[in-house]
Each structure stands twice: as structure tokens, then as C-alpha cells.
Image 1 (cartoon, rainbow, N blue to C red):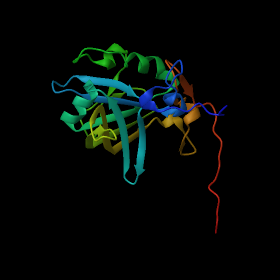
Image 2: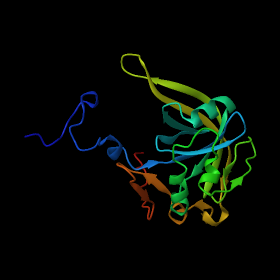
Image 3: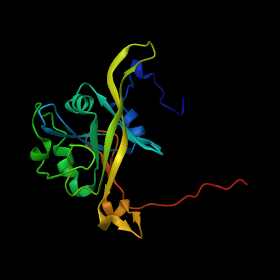
Length: 205
């Protein structure tokens, strides 16, 4: 008997729920604010999200299906990443609802707005940190057969960073004090940063 449960994703996993998102976890949450063509604000969390470059800082998030956020960032060329934390977890979750186009998720979640400095896209008032971004590329993904699938990557470069001053400890952003949360495997599973540990890269010289 094998020590592993192995499967081809195209053929099905044979388990009660798909385990892939539980394995690739915890995942940072890209809480993305954007503006529609009519100027209405949109706010939605994306767990297919991360940073892929530091100099310059470049953020990427993935959208399954053509959601309002995807249409907005394609049109406006801008978005804001807002850090999801335990303090605003309920509001973040509320903003994930399938609202009709034109509904302001800031209002639906009871959140205030702060003005950005490099675009008209608002950021979440009270967020531990936010990053204003300009869109570099929106790319539709393709499978191994070269066929387009219903997922898109949005790639943006950070143009302005905002950090709540009370979360800087000796000049360092404290993710434990901030209560940063991340998406885990199955329905409704999240994790909060409650401690960190340090491992320094080995010196081989």
C-alpha cells in the first residue's frame, strides 16, 4: 500500500473535498479595492495573491472568472491592496459576497474610505497597511493544450505604501500586532499570525 494518496487533478481527487488549496496554505489575502467605469468603488478579497518582486515591488493576484474587480482594473489601470487582519476579518468576509455590479462593498461591509495619492482608487480606512498599485499587465491563463481558461492574472507595481504608525515597532512592521490573517484550505478556514520565528540564511563562504 502506498504511503501517499496520489491523483491527477484532471481526473479528480477522490477525497471529500479538493485538497489542493489546503496544501498551498496559508495564502496571503489580496483585499483589492478598485473603481468601476461609473466611479463606483469595489472591494473584494482574493486568496490567489502574493508579491513577486521587491525592486520594484510587484504584486500579482488571480481572478477565477470575469469579476467586477477584473473589469475595473482593466479599465482604470489601478488598484489598491489592503492588508486583511483579524480586526477587520468580518468586514473582509462581508465584502466577498456576490453583490450586483455597481454595489459599493465598502458601504455593504460598513467600511470607511481613505483617499489614495497616486490614483482615484480608495483604500480601506483603518487597514493595517495598504499599497497603491498601477496595472502592468492583465493576462488570461492557458492550460497545457494552449486553451484559454477562465482565470486571469493581474500584475501591478506598487506606487505608494501606507502603514499604520502604531504597528511599527522599532521601525519594523509587526505582523503579530497587526493580526495579519491568511486563507487556509477549506470553506471558511483562516489563520492569524500569532508568533514568528527567525531562521537566517546559512553563510557558505
